[in-house]
Image (cartoon, rainbow, N blue to C red; front, side):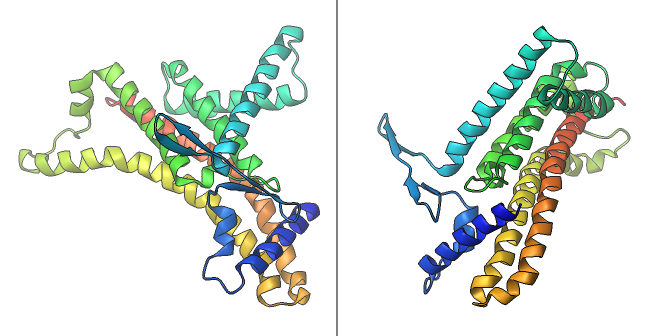
Length: 281
């Protein structure tokens, strides 16, 4: 933890010097996406732009760490799957992974979706582990948190939206699903208003998923950088006795938030699927 904060402090100090006299926010420079990988004080790696079919596709640091997360997920989960062929008694990483899988299956999918939860379990596990790995990798020095990118969380939310609609329509039929969105016993005169509200509600749920994950993962990093930056803003190391312990506390809190946000996103997605599938309950 101490090494991490020292690294953050060195990086911020270098960035503060570069941004001195500039109107740009050097804190946001470390939070937002960019076309380079910052390894200050060791150096900077500039990322290329791909030219495909007449389009410019810039490779950003969030794209890089999206691939890192994907590769890490494939390697770890394949290793866990293979370990069961050697021994039925899990240990180490396999044991920890099994705990998460059983938790998502029993405490999230089964309890919120109920009957036929199995068909949605692969997606819920994928979303959970992707968010979990992304959040934890973002806590490592010189990395980036891809879930602090609104585009990434929006794609996750859209995918969850598609799964919710798919589940509802498959179980109840297209007409039956949309008919089930209207509460029973509503006066006819209120039906036009209720229909509009329910239709808007279909899109506010995934919107809330995207914003919640994005905001929570961004906020913690901003607070850590802001606390450490007090040393450079006030131009005295005396404030470090206050800012560093506070930053360390927030960093430890971020570990909990990283796990909690993966749980919340998966739980809400599963809950929305359960509501769409079992409209008659």
